Each structure stands twice: as structure tokens, then as C-alpha cells.
Image (tube, rainbow, N blue to C red):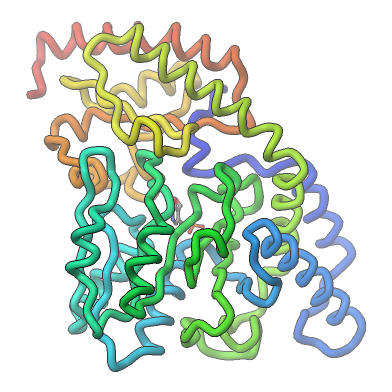
Length: 384
Ligand code: PLP
């Protein structure tokens, strides 16, 4: 199989699986228990916390484990909004992941004024619109670091500068940049930042929220005193251990591996542009996570391309994994100005550790043939 959907999820690294198995066999204690087997688990979790913190340029005490990237996003949005009850305005970009966008829409129905920042045709947030949106009543600005669908990287430092200038904290969803570009919370200047383990060859069902020391935030989950009383619920201990190990592997191999996938992605992009007539590349040409490739094939339905590729055991996506089952047109592709029929003709390929030069060569052989065949069929049965 050729797996080209690393933005949806990644295979668990063998070292991570091994570490998790070891932990499950050896440690069942509750980290909140005061006797030695509980203490030991707490110590192991704190090693993972240290690793995740160090990889982000944060202190261990600024990392709060959650049940997913989605939960970390919800925590950031609802936690800051409830900590600042005198402020009832929220600013997010129009191309956020549903974890932020749907949280914003939920709040909008409950009397929060939400501004959805527009983006240009490359998917970059309009900074003038951000300036205009900020008021003394703004509680939070949340703009993702890079798009899961088109890979465009946002100018977070500038966004922070503008928002902080008005005394407004900034959250960024860095689920799609962690492990793919250098990340440093201090350089970015953000107050809150989300990551997720399963996008970095770790297990599913565990994420983390970086909360800069001193940030005003309330818990999102209420109950016990876990995660320093900010995220109640017995920790997903084995998941957190796996997350820590995934970050360790990332630290050891990430910098060396990364140029390899980027070169493969560049070769795939070039090849598709050369071999397939009438393709349109969606996303920023430069300020982009290079392993994310999104192409429109005008005149075709993305689903037909996806299914044809799947018969050759080549797995791609029609956009974000979370909206795969819905008929809706991607809100990201709509926001960059694509007509619905062009948006519906777009597929995403995202490369990672499992890919080789051979994979790229195979895709460059199979894809142009599939497109040509589908175009011949749709010429008799036009869809638009
Ligand atoms: N944010 C972005 C940008 C994502 O791509 C994803 C996953 O697709 C998430 C948040 C949600 O993360 P999780 O799957 O851990 O809930």
C-alpha cells in the first residue's frame, strides 16, 4: 500500500508501540495515588511532559495533557472565554479545524460575537481584518499554525504582535506543524498551543495544550485535581507514555527525516504538474508545510479519483479526515475562493515516514492514467 494521508493520522512508530506495551505490562497505578506504584506512574508521565515541553520550547509545568487535539482546542477556546466573562468576543480564522470552528459556532449561538477572519487565495489570514476585529471585549484570537487541508502556514508571530498590542491572548492549533516545521512557543509568542500525538507517530486519543505560565484560563473538564486542577479525569497514562516516546523519536530522527519527505513531496508535486493537464495547486507556494499537497482536477469528482486510486492501494484524502463522510464542500477551499465544483474536484496527499521514492514513482505512473480515464468517462457524462 502507498499511504499518502499522514495529515489524517500516522502509523504508530515501533519504538512507541514497544514502550506502550512495556508500560501496560509493568505499570497500572493511578498517578494520583500517593503510594509507590502511583508515584512511579506520575514520575513516568512527568518524563513525557518534560519531553513534549522541551520539543515545544516550553516548561514542563506549561504542558497539560488532554484526550485529543480536539479537546485541547475546546479547552483553549472555552477555558479562556469562561475565565474572562466580561469579554464576549472571539476571533478565529475562517479556515480553522472544526475543533475550533464548531466551538466558535456553539458560542455564537450563546451570545458571543465571533469574527471569522477571511483568508487570501493562498489561505493566508488577512491581518487588516484582524486589526479591525479586535476590541476591548475580545477574549481570544485563535488562528491555526498550518492548515490540515492545504498546508498554508500562518504568520503567527505577527498575529501575536497585533493581538497582544490590544491585550488579547492568542491560541494556535499546531497539530499539523508539530514535527513538520520547527516549533518554539516562545518564538511564536502564543499563550496557548495545541498538539496531538497521533499526527506524530504516536497513539490516538491523546493531545496536549501548552498554556503559557500566567495565562488566565478555567478548566474545560470539571472533576478531580488531575493536570494541576485544570483537566479533570484520570489520565490516559499509556497514551501519554506513547506520546512522550513519539516525541523522543521525533527529536532523535525528525530533523534528519524531514528533508527526505519534503524532497519526495516536491518531486510528487512537480511530477503531477508536469504529467496531468489542467491541474490546479491549492495552497501557498512557499509558506506551506511542504509535505501537504492539495490539487484540484477540474471537471472530476474527488471521490472518483480517491476510489480509483484506492483500487491501486494508493490512499489519499478528499480533505480533512473529519469531514470525509459529509457531502459538504470544504470550508477551507471555499474560503480561498474556489468555486464549489473546483473544490469538489480536489484531493489531498500528505507524505511522511512511510513513503519512499518508489511510492512517488508509482503515483506518478498511476495518477495521470486514472485522471485521463476519468476525464474520458466524464466527457460522456459531464458533471459540470
Ligand atoms: N486540529 C487540526 C489542525 C487537525 O488536523 C486535527 C486532526 O485532524 C485536529 C485538530 C484534531 O486532533 P485529534 O484528532 O487529536 O482530535
